[in-house]
Length: 142
Image (tube, rainbow, N blue to C red; front, side, top):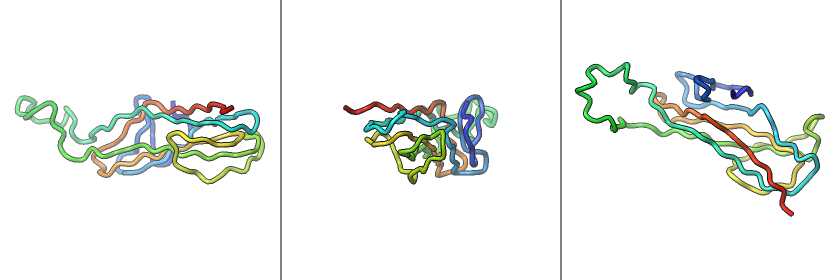
C-alpha cells in the first residue's frame, strides 16, 4: 500500500508513482529491517516497476485505425526507481543514530537495522514510472 512518507509521489491503483507535473519524487519506506543484534549481513533490495506514458493514452487517440502501430513508442520513456539504505548499530525502536543514505542493489553491512527510501526519476514529465512492489531482504553472513 506504500503507506510511508511521500514527497512528490502518490499511490494510484496500488502503484507508487511520481505526482503529475513533476519529474522526481521520494518515497520513505514505512518499515525497516531489524536484525535484533548487530550482525554482518547481505542486504538485497528489489523493485518491480513499469514505465508508462502520461500522454499516449487510448482515450487521447483520435482515430485508433489511423494509428501506425500498436507497438510504437513515441520518444521519451526514460524513468527509473533507485533505492537507498541507511543503517544503524542501535535499536531502531529507541532513538537510533542513522547513517547517511547510500545507493543499494545488494551489499554487505555490519548493522543492527536498516531503513530505506526510493527515489523515482523521469527525464520527461510526459512519462512516469509505476512501482508495484518494493522489497528488502537481510541474510546473515557466517
